[in-house]
Length: 244
Picture 1 (cartoon, rainbow, N blue to C red):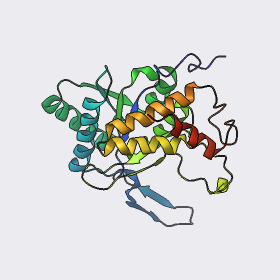
Picture 2: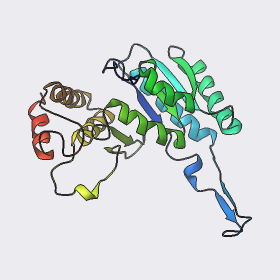
Picture 3: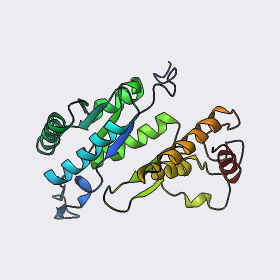
Picture 4: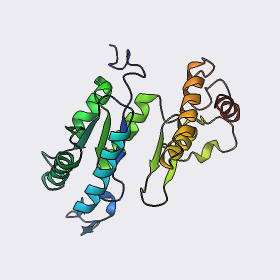
């Protein structure tokens, strides 16, 4: 049986996920009662305030407006049919901000479970996705694999008013230290994302074009560590040689 992604190319897989990264269920609110007993109860609370939601949505709308895409569509991903309180807050805030300030951007909504299906079945449907912390954590890993794997996927923890941090979406891999086998494209793409965020759009585009040219060259055999057909240093030098 064929995978739905079999005939999908770069023109079909071109979307961005913006994940709120300071609230939600990861804030540590909750607790445990009667731990270790047959009656143990554990709770983990999803918490969002309107200012936190609005801050994320504003960034997402502005990003969608500036992004070089014909769709100009911002999809909110949540699970408001079950998470009725936090979900309702996100849905209302999304609509109110879009209706008031971003009438030229199409508003869309998708449940998170359906989103994972559509990522694989019809990734070309999406343009920019905005979501809360937990759901963003999950769907960005799936998105990374759809585009080619952790070796090429980059991400950033972005503070529009302060210091931001950019990194390969897979994080660190200490077991590969010093072995010259890791795919550096994710780190290179993170650098391009950093340049774009800092306003160095020409440099960001040059790096992006160099990565694209490297992938199109046929010299890179795989995105997987140790299977690229060249080492980490050699691939980094190869991409650097293509920057114009």
